[in-house]
Every structure is written in C-alpha cells, then in structure tokens.
Amino acid sequence: MKPASFAYAKARSADHAIELLAGADGDAHVLAGGQSLLAGLNMRLSAPALLVDINGIEELCDISLENGEVRIGALVRHAEAERSPVIAQHAPLFAMALPQIAHPAIRNRGTIGGSIAFADPAAELPACLLALDGAVDIAGPGGRRTVKADDFFQNLYQTALGEQDILTGVRIPMASGETRTGFAELARRHGDYAMVGLAACARAKEGELADLRLVFFGVDLVPLRAAGAEGALMGIEIDGSRIEAAVAMLDQDLDPPDDVQADGATKKYLAGVLLRRVTRQLLENAP
Image: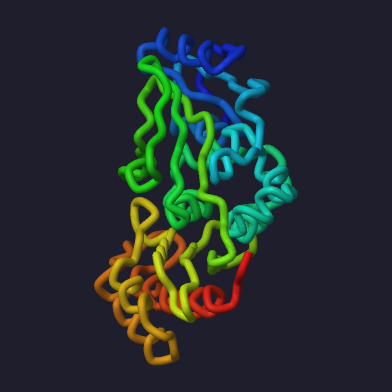
C-alpha cells in the first residue's frame, strides 16, 4: 500500500521543528528513524497533513555524560548506542536490551528517541528507561522541560508529549559499583515483538537488593512496574523461596490481556519464568 498524500518539511533545528509543528494545527508527525511511522503511513493507519523530518539536527545526535547522568540524544540510532562504550559502561541495562530490538537493519535506522516517543507497550527501551528511573527531555512552544519516565508513559501509545513538542533526548542515572541490572524477553523468534519482557535495576547493599525496579513489557498498555514482586525481593537475603514468593505476587501485579502473541494466562506464566531468570542476573551482574 501507499500512504495518503502529505506535505514534507525538513527541520533545521529543534526550534524550527517546533515552529513547523505549531503551524500544522495538530495534524503533523515527526520523522526520526521512521521504522514504525512509515509502516503506519503505508497501511494508512496514520494520515498526517505534514511530516516534519528532524534528521540532521546535530544537537539531537550525541551521547554524553552530564552531572551523573548518561544523556542520549533523540536521533542516536539503536546500532550506534549498541556500539557505544559510554552506554556499555554507564548504562548496562540499555546495553543488554539493545541487541534484542528487532533486526540489524531496523537498528541501523531506528532511533532511541523514536522508540521512547512511540511508546509501544511491547518495546524494550521504554521499559528500560522506567526501570532505570530515567527521564525524557522535551522541547515545545513553552520552552524545554524534563519529565520523569514514571510520568511520561500515560496510555497505549500516549505520552506526555504535546502536539507541538519534540523529544530531544533521554537521561539515565550513571551506573555505580552497587548497580545491578537484569534483562530478558521471550519471543517466538529473535527480532519479533516480545510476548513478555522484563527490565530490572537495583542496588546491591550488604548482600541484599535495594531500590529494586522490576518493569514488565508486553503485559499492559504501558511498561508496568511489579510493585508486589519488588517488595518480596527487597531488604532480605534472596533464596529460592523468596524468588517463588515474588513470582506468586505477579498474580496481583499483572493482568495481561490476550493479544496476537499469546493469551493472558500464558503471558502471566512467562512473566514468572522471566522473573526467576532476571532475579538471578541481578544477584550476579555488576557494571
């Protein structure tokens, strides 16, 4: 299929992109990597009057360390982030997740900002950002602001981005010597959307886990923290019985809907499988 007709504009800067969006009266989309957008356009699931291309805006292309945080520009490609020594050292959870995203051809064009802004509930990076207690940098007509990941993902494909906003980057706290991370997903084939996935981050403190964040994806309309399972694993020495207690808490934490990947009961069972695997990773992994 071919997309419906639309106008095209190449933004020269973030401010110029905001001006272009403001002039479209809410009937515009931002083009970054385009790996989800172009498919939607071709299937006519989306038919904007204007496409604003932000590729080439240099301020959106950097990976840097700022004030104890890793900042990743919105236009950093998945493949570039996957090869980055900064991310490997200071954001190990992202480094674990990036090779699981789709296939190399997709990662060569897809962007970090595009994945976060699209907010697919089965995508890896939104869950990682939430697990890391990260934040999103946004530029809009009212200026620039930073929104915590906890507040950014609001509903199915809905985020804190306004119609005239662009996502300029994400911020992740730098890993320390106490940081422990874990990541796993289950898909029918490598590169498919995950039936269920789990991203986790914690601090190792005197042989126990503290500040644990367990975030499942593919089980709800947004990346979802498993508060009951977190509580079952924190502040105690972890053994097999404690892990099983955390798995049991998933009955309260998760209520996955049926979808084309699997029914809800299967997803809940697989979530328990992943929780066992990822808990063991947390007990072993250090940056």
